[in-house]
Structures are given as structure tokens and as C-alpha cells.
Image (tube, rainbow, N blue to C red; front, side):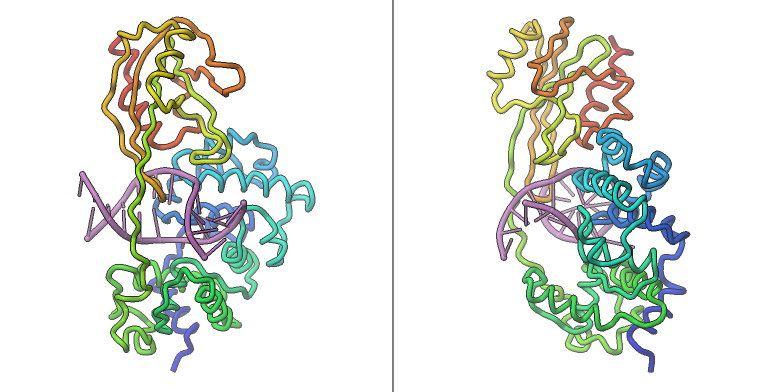
Length: 351
DNA sequence: CACCCGTGGTA
DNA sequence: TTACCAAGGGT
């Protein structure tokens, strides 16, 4: 009878994913880029960004000397923008201290911003062929089912247990196809919703399947209702420019360009009238846009106006007049880009 | 440890 | 339309 890892390796060869762009080489830099992009993000989505990012930043040196804004530009639309800023920080650390060579140890990798134990393990496996475990969402699910672990996967004690299991299962041979296969299996066969147990190479030893608990594992914590927040965004144009504001590093869309935001209409009116010379009667109210983040819902109320004056709100608040032709390449979050497309693109045509 | 941090696809 | 999901890490 085949070993756990042997079954996965054999299955992976014919059923796994073997032609993804980051599988055609063992370059630590490009593998690192893929691993960061793949954090909490689907393969399909990453494929739309990966080649484009590497074209702009083909080496870790080229990334290290880039501006934060240029990196965010290439990340624009991918989400979790802190990942991009951590990547830039990591690139600069490595180039400065190691002369563009990646650390080849778990500790060295985990010391870098944005690289945790699982990402470090994946880099060690795929770049260097070293024997290290990973524990991403797919692996957690596969192992929880295989060993019929019914506790919720949120508790650190359960996670530690799974790390221990993942570590023990790491094979001496075929670490790359094994690790890839474990993820492929979780993604395509041992899926959360409707696991295809009849296609699973591990089915005869799977304790969850034996106990008919495959659908209950992993036990999901009750989905909590997402809170709803509300904001007002200003679409202010001046000839062929639009007023944008650089967001603070902390909260959502950190470091990106967005529309100026206001909590209350009254403050917006004052700014428009006193600083931009806008006739308040010319303000248009656009239909609100809803956007869902991972942890709250946002209702975006939109107000549109134009001016011929060109002051800034104040020198310190990071506002900038962005030429409309530069929008496509700017670091702008997805919903804001959507608003621009809906309400501003084609404006020069109609007016 | 609970919470923060995006987005587009899909049922 | 709503809800849920997908290769985590930092604080």
C-alpha cells in the first residue's frame, strides 16, 4: 500500500496543476512574488497580475529601487495592499544586506516582513527543494478531514497540532510535487463545499469520510454579520484633472490614491464653496455604491462637482490633481476605479 | 487571541 | 441579490 505522500505525489503528476507560470523555474525571487500574491487570493486572480508585475520588476534589485507608488500601481486591484508594501520593504532589506540573495533558512525568511511560517516553507520547498511543511487553507482542510479533526480551526492549539502533523508527513523524496499536490488536492478535490471524495487518492484512509463527517469538517465558526459603514466621496474635476487624495498607510487601501472623503455633507459643502469656488447648486448626487470588504460593508455616497479653480484643500492632506489620462496606471483601489469608469470616463466626449 | 486587511468569481 | 469563498501575516 502506498504511503500518504506517495499517493499525493502520484496523484499530482496527472491531476495536479503543473503549468502555472511560477512552476516553470526555481527562482526564489519569482517564487516569492507568487507566494505573496497567492496569500488569501485565488490562482485565477493572481494570473492577471503576476506577469505584469514581473515585467515591471524583473529582479529583486529592480524592485528594491522602485518607489512605493510604482509598486502599488502594479498591485492596484489585487487587494491586501500591505502585502505590496511589505514586499518592497523585504526587497530593500535583502538587497541591502545580502546582495540580492534570499535567505535559505526558515528563521531568515520568517524575519522578513510579509513572510510567515507557511510562506517561508513554500519558498524553501519550491525554490530550494528543502524539506519543510506548509499549512495554508487547503492543507488545513485536507489534514483536518484525513484525521477527522472536529475542533474549529481557529484555536491556536488546533493549528499547532496541524503544524505537527504537516511536519511529520513531509516526505524524504519529492517534496515539490508533494507540497504542490497537497494544495492541488485541497483546492480541486477536497474542496470546502462539495468534496469529490470519489476522486480522492486518500479516500480509503480518510477518517472523516469513514465517519461520514466530510461535510462537517472543517467546522466553520458561525458567520458574524458584517457591520456597515458609510462615507461620502467627492468627485471633483478640473478640466482634464480629477482631485485625488493619498490614503494613510494604516487602514484599508493603505497608500493608494482615492477620492477625498467626508463624514458629513456640511464639511464637504464648506470645502467646495470656500476653497474651490463651486456653486453648490451645481453639485450632482450620484447613486451610492456598495462595496464589501472582508470585515465590513461600505456604502459609498457620491457627490460630483467641477471647478475652474485649482487650489488644494490644504498642503498637508495629500491631495493631488490627477490627469485623467494617468488614471489607468495609477495606484487606485478597485471600487474607486469602478466609480471613475462609471462617472468620468467618456466625460470629455459628452462635454 | 480577535481583529484588521480586498477582490472577483460563484452557487 | 446575498453569502461565501481563495496559496496568510501582522498587531
